[in-house]
Image (cartoon, rainbow, N blue to C red; front, side, top):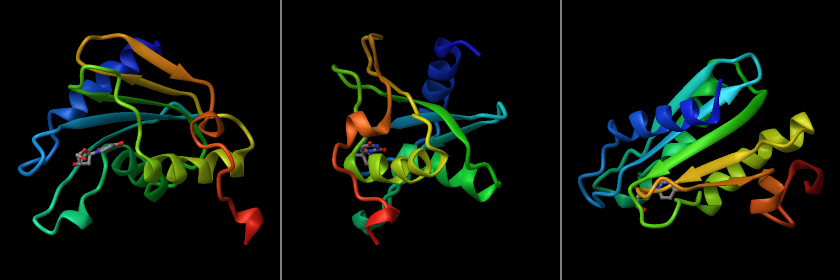
Length: 134
Ligand code: THU
C-alpha cells in the first residue's frame, strides 16, 4: 500500500471524529505487518480528561483485535503545519516498537498536504520510558 493511501485513510477517519468541544478533528490510520488497517479518530467527552486521541483509538483497535505487529501509522489534522502526535500517543506507540524491536515510521500531515515522515517512535520520544525500566 502506498503512503498516500494510508494518509487518505487517516483523512477519512478524521470525518468520524467526535469533537464537540475542541472542533479539532484528528484521524489516524495504522497498518499492521499483516496488512490490516485500523482507523481511529479523536473521541471527546464533557469530562475533558476522558478524551481519547485519534492515534490511540487506532492503536487500541488493533491491539484489541490481536494485532501487535505495527508497521506504520499516518495521522491527519486540519492544521496549518503537519499534525504531530501528542506525548501520550508517542508513549503508547513506543510500547509496541520496543516489543517488536522494529521501528514504526510515522507520517503526519496537515491541511496544506505536506507530509513529515519520522523513521521511528524513538525519534519522536528520546529517552522513552519502557518496560525494561520496571
Ligand atoms: N488530539 C489527538 O487526537 N491527537 C493528538 O496527537 C493531539 C490531540 C486531539 C485530542 C482533542 O480531541 C483535540 O485533539 C484537541 O486537543
